[in-house]
Amino acid sequence: MELTKIAKDKENNITKKNLEEQIKREKKYAKEKAFYHGKDYNLSETEIDPKTVSNIPVIKPEDDFDMDDVYSDIQ
Image (cartoon, rainbow, N blue to C red):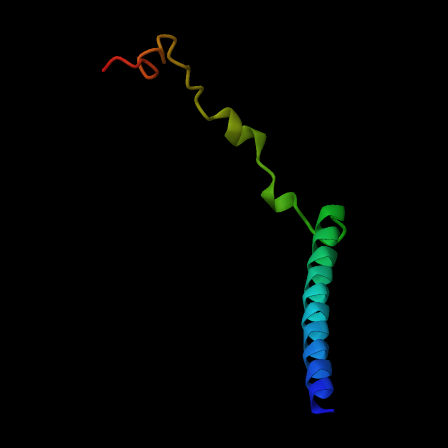
C-alpha cells in the first residue's frame, strides 16, 4: 500500500515538474509572439539616422590579398 503511495507521489512530482516547465515555455512564447508582432514595442529609438551613416568613411579592400600561402603545405 505504501509503495503505491510513493509511486503516485513520485508520478505527481514528475507531472508537476513537467507542467511547470511547459508553463515557462508558454510564457516565453507569449512574450516572443508579442515582440514579433510589434504591438507593444516602440522600436523607433533603435533606428539609425541616415545622416550619421553617410559620415562613415568607406574602407576600400586591398586588391593584393592572396590566400595561396596560407594553404600551402610547404613550410
